[in-house]
Image (cartoon, rainbow, N blue to C red; front, side):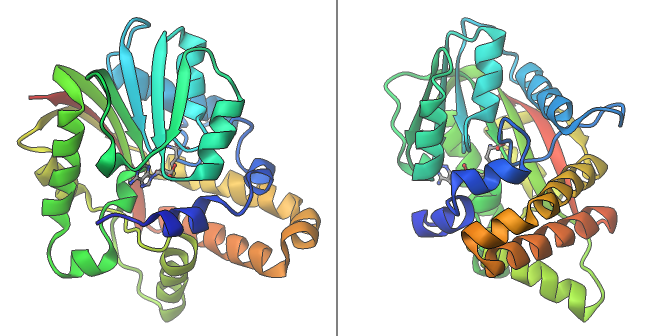
Length: 282
Ligand SMILES: C[S@@+](CC[C@H](N)C(=O)[O-])C[C@H]1O[C@@H](n2cnc3c(N)ncnc32)[C@H](O)[C@@H]1O
């Protein structure tokens, strides 16, 4: 079981205009990769795409699938690199409509549940950027099912591509547990209200789950990059406070400010991190 369509719509369908106000101009809703620390958010987001493009060993002729493609930001990168055919799937109707309206060359996005996706041909390469955080619910993790369910995810990914394919994978991670009641409440609020049904995996769970279908040949973590990314999102959200309160109401502003402020502290205090993996289909 993964986050349901209704839960996904709650997380990603406040309104495309709302997310446009505080994400970068290409609507990446995942950690950027700050490599020098001097980059703009936009530049750091393209760094992420380049790393995952290289992890997927992409070239223009290869057919690639982006699992959980959001508003199509990583697919836009493929269009810039001349990828002839890049497919994306998302469970959010608003995201699929937005991505297709951009008409990026060679890009097709479907509103499609990953678990039911039956492509007509096998992919040469896969990418998935922070979609796995929707694969296991907190209750399932409490029941000890996390590794088994992540393994199902990696197995299903393997079934979608040719033997020897490469997979550029990125996930948010959960790490230390905060100590104070307020911090615990803020994390619970983020999980329950902003991302219901989702749970960030632990690094060790992912390492166990990629086997036996994938071999992890390279890995980098980027906790501080996510801190900077969420810090930028929060700064931009606050810049647009008046508009957001007027258009979407006080509650939306208050909730998103609390969520993003919690994220900044989560990456700073090591409650959360982020990982990129280069995986080879065994
Ligand atoms: C945090 S967003 C990341 C979006 C995008 N990868 C990015 O970098 O901006 C998670 C994405 O996973 C998608 N997702 C979650 N569960 C899914 C499922 N079962 N099938 C397809 N997409 C799913 C959501 O619709 C959303 O687009």
